[in-house]
Image 1 (cartoon, rainbow, N blue to C red):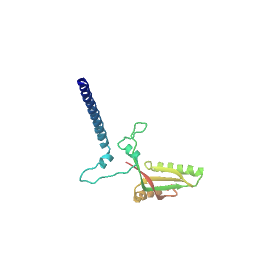
Image 2: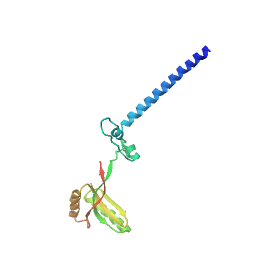
Image 3: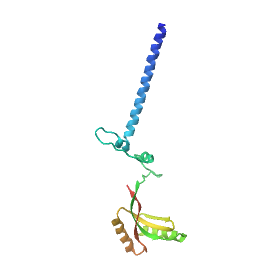
Image 4: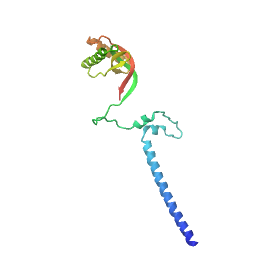
Amino acid sequence: MNICLSAKRLINKEYMKINSFCFLILLCLFACFNVQAQNNIIKSLERDVPGNGKVTIHQDSRLESKIGVERINDNGIEKPSVIKAIGFRIQVYSGNNSRDARNEAYGVATQVKTYFPDLSVYSYFVSPRWLCRVGDFKSIEEADVMMRKLKATGVFREVSIVKEQINITL
């Protein structure tokens, strides 16, 4: 009987050691996970600090997965980050729904690139017409300055400022 009690005590001691070891491992894993979560700016903003307000950020999980990730294309060169915003572009061509209109839109885009190589050019189809628009201007004043330069060349027949979603390079 005495041997059975000693065996039970020994088993209990070994069981406690195993439990303590597992608890220690879980605690280390939790600490590592917590440190990694704090590296995310969103998580650090949302933390609860006593005596201060709490920030809550609602966003798509795909966006959160991109935070802190370096964007590199196939050539190993870093891609410029772009955000979309409402701004202004200059419309330099508007045609109909034909193949000729498409070719003219791309032709006008080539002419713009000839005169203004640094200016971004967008040729695309919006039913029922082909459009060629240039620039990504945050203000109408910036767009107006470029519109005057485009008109001064005497090459472009129709030039007008339109409000549109633009690309802003970060």
